[in-house]
Length: 160
Image (tube, rainbow, N blue to C red; front, side):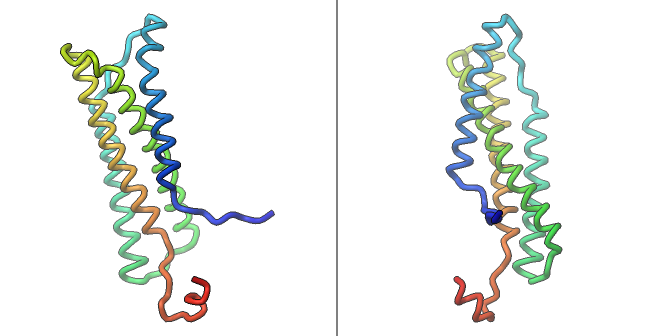
């Protein structure tokens, strides 16, 4: 059985996941109201957690890029694979989360004159923006994990 090469996350894949998250987020309010349940508020912790994740992924992307591409150091393959897996998983999850919070905010868009729905929209948008930042950092980490090509190797140039 052949192994497929691991590829970077595609924009189409992330957009589809974002739309799925948006649909789920948009459906939460009507579903909970139909069940006579209380619609939850969004905590600032959600945005803070996504910002923290973005910072961690950003630092990992920066240090990995510096080590592999600027300083031309080598990295143990298992470490590179773990970083790439973290980046891909983070990109997928943050696309879903960003879509969810956008959908949740949209479900309250018609009630902005009331304080609680307006608060839910503001906090949901903040969490969505923070999730998008985390997704960008995850994509940067994916890119940083790419093995640099050696310009001096003629066999490598022939393969390209």
